[in-house]
Image (tube, rainbow, N blue to C red; front, side, top):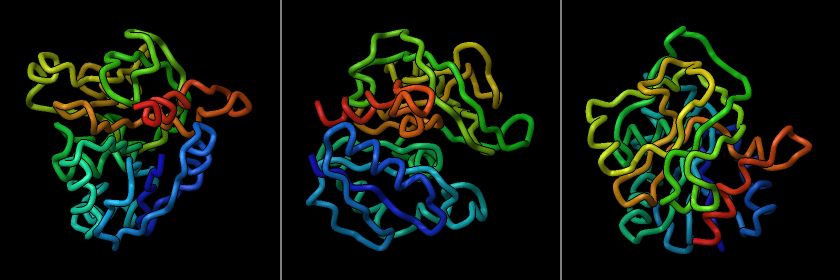
Amino acid sequence: MKVGIIRFPGSNCDRDVFHALELAGAKPEYIWWSKRDLSDFEGIVIPGGFSYGDYLRAGAIAAITPVINGIKDCVKEEKPVLGICNGAQILAEVGLVPGVFTENQNAKFICKWTELKVNSTRTPFTSMYKKNEVINMPIAHAEGRYYTENLKKLHENDQIILSFESENPNGSMEAITGVCDEEGLVCAVMPHPERASETILGSDDGLKFFSGMIKY
């Protein structure tokens, strides 16, 4: 499976995602923000980092780059798209997932391992987990607090895919830290599965995110 990894000025988790995708058996390739045609790729991952220095707000400038049109075309073609941390902020900014990821409740950058509950297994990225399974992945963000005005709709459509289990470190609504679109093919998560892709890192719970994408 050929998977594109989007690169913006300020992306810093692209190499980690590349390695995790290789571990899962994919054929990753970097894509710069200026590329419009993504038709050669079977899936897309938008990695974490600080695109354009998070000026204005996280993901705001990345949201108006040419590659976003290519990502939207991939969504129309029902290809899986995963946004991690800054990638999640970008997907929310362009409206490909509901809600927003805004400033943490304590207004500080948080970097720590967290326990997460897998709320939905209907997406390619969570299909290899069990519903309500508790997994471990790290977070690293200053703007990860999830908010939406359509919480009822999220529950009705099974669009909440991850939530914090033992604590709510950033003050997210209902401890939500991962959501998907109505079809379940576009997922935005604040935790970093690529940083939990090998036991030497402390956990390999995140590898299934990429293995599930390839299986799909």
